Length: 188
Image 1 (cartoon, rainbow, N blue to C red):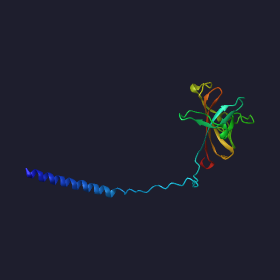
Image 2 (image 1 turned 30 degrees about the vertical axis):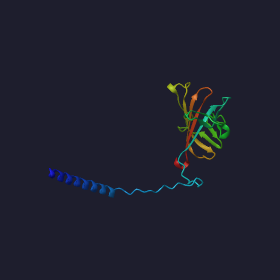
Image 3 (image 1 turned 180 degrees about the vertical axis):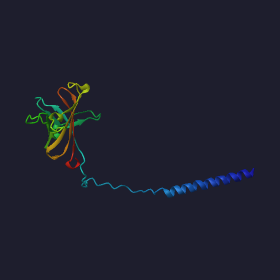
Image 4 (image 1 turned 135 degrees about the vertical axis):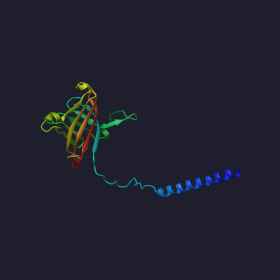
């Protein structure tokens, strides 16, 4: 019966050597862990300028009481992410005129100092500036979406191009969210 204990001890010793050798080999192949902490810039440090890739402007809109144009202002969301108009006294405001200020049919959107004008999606086809999506294809139904290809012609984004998307939530008084996505001239 003693001979059973000896092979068991030898087997245990061999297993220990094999497992230990494998662990040593694994440790040799595993890079050392570091305890270094990533460097975080001080709160008052000047941020490093990054190249601008896309500018996104998001606002609330509603039809002006005259019905002649759309008022554009800040968007506010609650903790349930339900959005509506924000405090217009605390942010830039503007307007959208789908006929243009000269009633020339070229849509124009102003936000603060920025001015965006519609650009035909198809060269020579002024009607292609307005790309609508309606529920069931019925222009009287809401919510609906209007996409206008735009170019900034004044303000800090002058020369930027992109699109303005009006996402409506109701027909009366006519309100919703506008998202303007812009690419700088060198990204075009």
